[in-house]
Every structure is written in structure tokens, then in C-alpha cells.
Image (cartoon, rainbow, N blue to C red):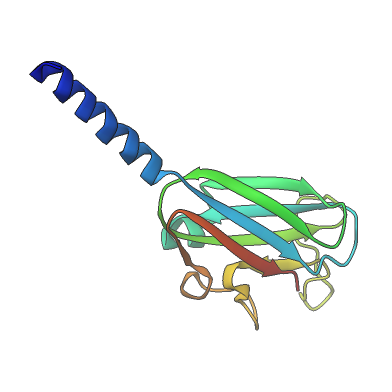
Length: 139
């Protein structure tokens, strides 16, 4: 093998391993779904800025079929993320509330944050390093 072939092979292997090392996946389990109807609206954020502005880097809508769902978010880069979700039972695209503003539909945040209101980014963010599994329990 000549020098050019060795350099080409070395470069190819380095690029291939870098691409594989950067691929990550979030495997999300959503539990405690109270009503088997409607959809789960999921928003994934990659910074405090996107989290606070409500501009997710990924969003999905998954039809509810039982009391638990498993969802994958492949092809991510390693880093910090946070997730907000809503169980939109009537598929009207919003979180329904009662007369005093309390939610009447299920919702949740990564790290199961937001015990007394919406979770802050500091409470909801988690680190993805390769494949990462998290669980969110619907409130």
C-alpha cells in the first residue's frame, strides 16, 4: 500500500468513526397515560433559549394506544436536551384548563420536573451521550 492509499484509508476511517461517535438517540418512555385517546405532543429542546421560546428542535405527535408509549428520537448529537409533552386528549392542539387555569389534560417534563407549575430548563434538562433512555410520567 503506497502512502496516498494509507492516508486515504486513514482519513476515511477517522471520518467514519467521528460520524458514528456523534450519532445519539433518546429513547423516551411516557407512562401514566390516563385516557387511551387523543395524542401525545412531544417537543425536544437543545438549549435554554429554545426551551424558553417554545421553539423545539424536534417535535412529534404520537397517537395514544394505551397507558404507556415508547418513542425514539434518533440521529441526535451529544449534548443537553429538555422535553415538554402534552396529552392532548381531544386533539385540539392546546392544553385545556379549568376555570381557574389548572390543566385538565395530562402533561410532563423531562426529569419529571415541574411539580408546582411548568419545569424550568434547569430542572428539565438532561445530558445525551450516545443512546440515552429517559422516562416521563404524565401528571
